[in-house]
Image (tube, rainbow over all chains, first blue to last red; front, side):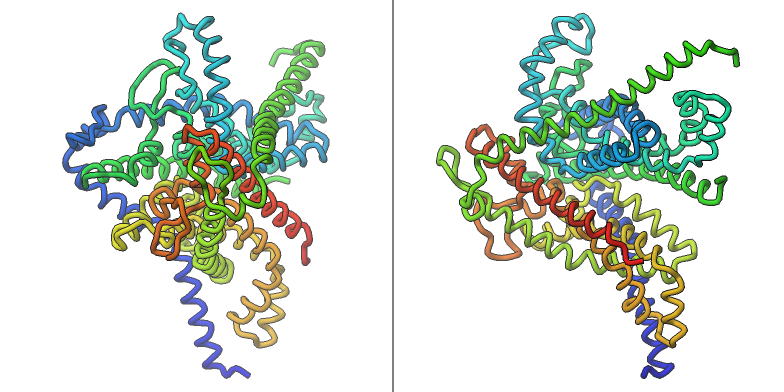
Length: 311
Length: 280
């Protein structure tokens, strides 16, 4: 039998150990940030703001500026989000409001499957199946019919900003869909029943009762998807063409922040080169921290509100 | 609101319904296409040799990804050894003692941490382990993977622990069992299947991770003999072979993708199956 003292000590030790493990989350986050900042310092000191306004990336002459990578990341992620959001919300609505229970459940698990496919497999499919198809079919079509627009000018390379946008869209749709689904399922059924009882059609019920209730949650899901898109590395690296240029045309190759890190970090020749890549990583970290912070605040406020709310 | 005729309302209802259905089909279509290609291209290169040989130079037939599969298994194993206890017992703290602000902060940070791009985890592991140890190593790769596992496991375990009825724990405490034994023998044990589900999902997630291994484990064309050497990993090989210009290597990459997908779905099916049988 335990005496009171060993019992007390056992509990104290247990509490201390579990506390330490729980704190490890904060420690990891802190160490990551400190490490990224300190490793970026040489580059931060040398280039200052010029790092994000210039576009000269030259490892031989030791001059680094990251605008093309920033541009590539921002444009590819935003376009992917714009395309993915309506598809995701539509699918989430289909799962929660439209489909019979079983169909909805099957659709939901298929979406989960899509979300579980590793990035490198999307990349493999992207580079060996999708980009050849884009090059032979889609891009020539776009050049022929929409070539008067600056967005569809140039030669069909296959690997391009367009390819990155497509693969990113495919990859973030399941994430936004499954979170939106959770948000929509939390809408109190009394709200929906009230709308139906007043004679609303299903679509009116969705518009009046479901979407307004889920608005901030859906926004949270979309922002979370944006964070995923900006940080996505492997698939984008494999299809975007890895050319640091700023071009309006979606058909020309581009480059993103995670891609340049993936391609160059293992083979840096100078300390400054490594530090410049670290600074790109730092920008990426800060951006994704802010994005995830906003998204989680939105999602948390939604779930909290509903836990004690109506119904 | 002006009254609209019922025909218009019905028409817009129908349009919306069709659009939702179309969106769902568009979303699921890539799944079908990608799976079709993985199976079609991958199945022909899967044979015994694939699991026992290391990659051949381009131009030579045969070759496999044995070193990549073994490397992935070793690094995932080591990452689990380090990451799972931290995640699981961290979650115990949150459920047993976690009412204050600190616990909310930990939960919140865990959610944020799992949203940070894994390539950054790789960079941090590089500067914490690769630089001091003066070389790419399996150790650094495992470390990066374990960092990714911790927040995932912590959050899923906590969800499971929260579902254990308070009465079970109270009964144990009332019998004079100290809290730490109650935690281990009653709370954790009752939630065991749920926790294993979470663990399997976390393993499935890191099994496909490529970016954090790029400059930690680096990859290896041959077998590694030591944990302080660069080590091959299945996703890394898929990446390197996919971007190579050689047909032979593309075939290996597809086969590797098939193995990886089968493995991941095996894991998530197992997780689902376990998750279905609830203890209470």
